Length: 290
Ligand code: ADP
Ligand code: MG
Image 1 (tube, rainbow, N blue to C red):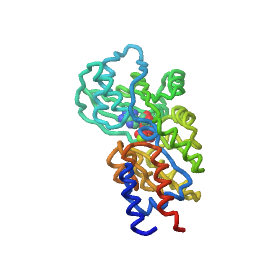
Image 2 (tube, rainbow, N blue to C red):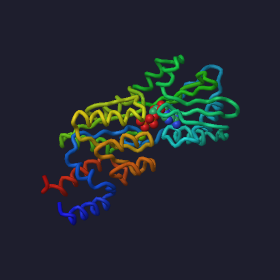
Image 3 (cartoon, rainbow, N blue to C red):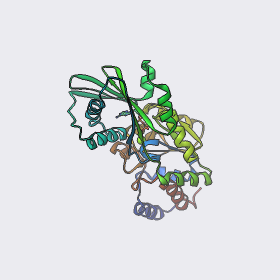
Image 4 (tube, helix red, strand yellow):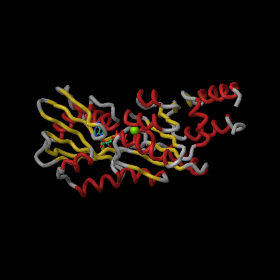
């Protein structure tokens, strides 16, 4: 296409809330065969609320909320925001942790009031061989709820279930991609049952769950090696390596700075169906080219 046509298209795109940061990738968008989506914050709103708490016997729920909230106040993860919000609503006074570190893709750990606190994924619990109420956990997961575990001094203190909402526009995006014969897939660090629940609701072609951040990037490379033109859409720090490796990296505008800085296109309106707009616009712009 003539440079002027391309310039006009990127200006038009910007008006619609599509920030094109890399024109070569934008040109490739018309050839996409697969669009991979992160789950939390991308296909879902990324606003969690606590729905259930299962506290172990002899443990005080307020105390757990104080310890968990204090630690999560240091994290920007949507799960963390949900827990902190809940603690605030209960008027629980949070403390500053003496230290904290993130356990990449698994949760976080720190010292609060001299106690070692961990808030972790089911994967971590299984890895460590810690006993938990399996039936209750599966029951919650099947309802599409994300469950995290609170450990105090490495002993299970309770589980917290949180629910997020599927973005209305995600359903639209998937069915549009379907009619363009573009495959849609999900790549998430969350539990398999939760991932399957969302995938079924949306009608995705494939799901990869319980993947660590570096595995997200590996999966994208793998799909490319199979010969597909692949886009990755995500919002989190953990999505950045995958965004960088995709033919087209797409960041959700409401997401983290790291994701936006890594992406080829930013969806300012945080609307997953704008992925389809990019493909259409790329096709329209470069139609006359081979
Ligand atoms: P996603 O791909 O859905 O964005 P992440 O890779 O960020 O997921 O996280 C994977 C899992 O690690 C979460 O589902 C959760 O179990 C756990 N996790 C990550 N960060 C936190 C946190 N701040 N608090 C509790 N659990 C966390
Ligand atoms: Mg995410």
